[in-house]
Image (cartoon, rainbow, N blue to C red; front, side, top):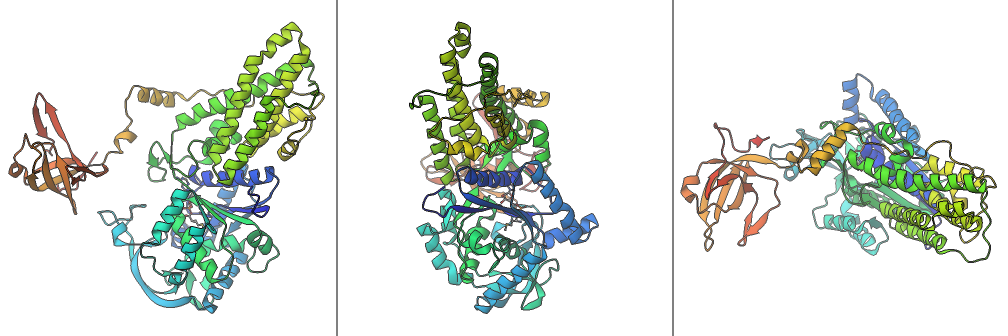
Length: 632
Ligand code: ME8
């Protein structure tokens, strides 16, 4: 889509761990990559799409053991679950790579040997805390106050072993330059800044092998160690086109615009470790790394342990495959975190798909059938009406948005054009024209709207792969690829001489299931759900020190012990409590408030108090309990 870039693209998703089933989060990235790949083709470029599964490492080995299967059996079973899900979601990948493919394993060894031969691998010893869930070492600083991994809330293992290290330090300078110059484009800009921020921290050489893990690709120069699962996984992007000299490597990797898509969780691996290893091996870097946010459901992280997983199958059951593809990607700006609610899926489905697109197609095609016998007149004269020119402009805007991978903004342009078409239809009142027998004018109006529908259908085809094909077939009397419609831009369209009406309602209006409606009503009444309450973190705190804030009659500065942590808060209770009377009291504090400064003093939390008729009393606990105790 960028004129100065090569005319072929190579689009990738992360390869997903096979220890869990696909959920709406993985579907988000995979549909995004699929849609991007289809847009490239729609706009006349070549595009290749790779996805797959990440199958080695201790996480997978442990899951297999729990399931009573060998690791390979678990991988075979679960990678098939991913393939099945993607098939149901109409994901059209060119290759599905599995890291247990023997060809991949061989290329991993080849690549690592190159790094070794060039002198960028050395032996050392690693000791640290390892989280199997993350498949990475974590530092003390990252742990929760209970000493757990902050992502998985599990206790990391203390590991000490002989490892091979990669000389990351050698490449940090040149890599930073490439990111700053845009040679390696990280999108959006906020994530690029986040990556540049990482260079200010200590980025140590990293270990690329494991001694104790058995389920992995053994190192070519030391068979007693396996390749660290993350390194094995990253190499998939070049093993798929068969690094270093397979028939597709030059075309796909060197001569295409390589676009990696993923969420923010794995940014460091992709934006630092991966390009540094490629530089070390003298391999071209990816061109764009596109990082999107996290989808949260009802403001909570989507996770198995919270039981709030939406599977692709659930979505397909509610909305059908086309609408699911459309909805999953278009609830929030691409790049930002998105709070999704199932209720909002229903609202968006009804407004954009049922009322806007579906209804326009239905009333236009029915009118052509009933009033013009299915035949649209060819337009006379060369002048394109405004409403069609708006359509051309929309095509341009969609292309521009996609250069920056602003997928939702691109869709919003199409939806806005459909609204314009609906307004045009309403204002021209074709039903009145039909009644008055003004068939010339009627033909023109319906031709213009049909032209707009054809353009919008082509533009929506990357999402609505099935329904837009139906609409185009009704309009053109034969199956017509959506890119062919766009090739006709600026010319009259050769519609069928017997335009058909779709056999089924494209997007019937859906009513929200009762329980969701009740939830939505409760929200409208300002009631909150338990999930809202759960956002507030309340804990017991013990007052260790208290003093007046000089110059502020109402404020006390308190030092609190909350479990292992000491915190300072400033509270407006000086009129009600003498500082000494508070010492040793166990009070209740909101511990996840953003810190603020009061009179220049940092306050990191808020205590709870009851207040009525100029009386105030602090909330405290009924019986003794250690500070740090959580309140729910
Ligand atoms: O990290 N919202 O695999 P993984 C949006 N195997 N996207 C989400 C999401 C959410 N709530 N949850 C998951 C791995 N994702 C490694 C990758 S690549 C060389 C190795 C998506 O199964 C998102 O793309 O944990 C995220 O980056 C990816 O799933 C993580 O998948």
